[in-house]
Amino acid sequence: MILLLLGLPGLAQSGLSEGPFNQLIIRGATLIDGNGAPPQGPVDIVIEQNRITRVQVVGYPGVAIDPEDRPALSAGGKEIDAEGMYVLPGFVDMHGHIGGVAQGAEPDYVFKLWMGHGITSVREPSGRGVDFAMDLKRKSAANQIIAPRVFVYTGFGQGSKDQITTPEQARAWVRANAKKGADGIKFFGAEPEIMAAALDENKQLGLRSACHHAQLSVARWNVLHSARAGLTSMEHWYGLPEALFEDRTVQDYPLDFNYNNEQHRFEAAGNLWKQAAAPYSPHWNAVMEELLSLDFTIDPTFNIYEASRDLHRARRAEWHEQYTLPSLWRFYAPSKVSHGSYWHFWGTEQEVAWKENYRLWMTFVNEYKNRGGRVTVGSDSGFIYQLYGFAYIREMELLREAGFHPLEIIRAATLSGAEALGFDREIGTVAPGKLADLVVVEENPLENFKVLYGTGAIKLTEDNEVVRVGGVKYTVKDGIVYDAKALLEDVKKQVEAAKKTENFEIRQPGME
Picture 1 (cartoon, rainbow, N blue to C red):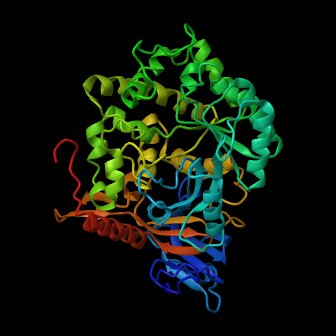
Picture 2: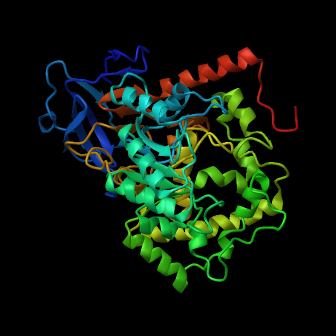
Picture 3: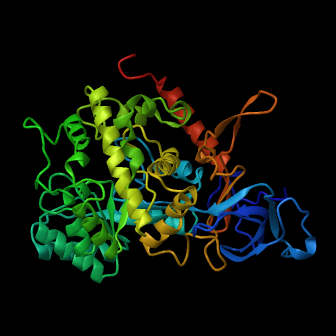
């Protein structure tokens, strides 16, 4: 391998990044280009500064490559020997919160976990405020920090001195948000006239939007209302079963339900999909067809609810010991005040209900994709035992469970996300003219998505030796090559230091 460690001014963390280069050639890789096409290789990919300038097939599998058939390396150019490796477009996380004060997760920690898993673009759907996010967006765009490119969707109403109670106030807030440079808005629901006004104003300004249709407003404004008003994408699944109701208008809540009780909230949610119209029934089909006609995007974030159907699996994930901060582990633990920490008494009945919830939910999402609908990959990490980066790969596995072909999953993780962001002319596929955002991995992710986890995949060799294979090798963003494994090693050091300072050891809840 020929690859010089130059380091990038402004990043100042030697060994983690190199470039950009006047010319960089990634040679001999198998390409999965993100548009749904099958793998092809060997190819040479030529990058100049931050743009892909050439993608050239240079031979056939198992046949020696004729040097005359390859792009020439310019004087001072750099190359990576990627023979036997796979190159994909950089991943787009459509639901990535940049840490949080309650979790004790700061941007450097979060960004390195994302970049260490090949995530080169992130849409943040609300966070610590537009000013905080815009500062990180600008620094990332200038490559002053190690970070994915950031798309800022401000939480509706964030920063407003007064509660928004009129359509006029809603429109004014939307204009102010756009003036600050935000890419869009994240809604949680509001009075119908306010939602309609805000979405209309936002659309007129050419910005995009997302919505978590929270239960406090969904009875009057579900996914169909939002899509008709111009919403770009729905997050999670809230609002969709309600649009599918046939024999009710309000979810069948237990009569002692309290929305501020997290176990009540998530336990009742596990019984929601079975209250909706049956799969492939006339109303089910009608809702789907209308959403398709509106070019609506579904960002399901399956992973963030997976602990609901298997709590033991989620809290025992092997990466927690090395990559989860003490503060984050404490945030996950059973609590009456931490969002998503709904393990007050979570058991068999709740998990069985959620398994059926998933079956019905996945059926809708997979069929939406089958009929040409846009489905994207988002993680919503930092809650419910889901860790940044790792949870994104788990989302890919869950899309596979839903029925997606692996190539459809890669497209959802790349091109579909870019389209939903309105940025597909720049990212989303590996093609000349596009920004050089790439993922390089030594194993074939189509055969086993687990090879994308930072902890790799377990494999038994012919010599009966257990080894770990995979993990992203290089993440390329804006033509800058990042050593993905070194980024994750840096995260491990951060976690080790925090544990040492606090004399902390992960213990399972109630077993201290």
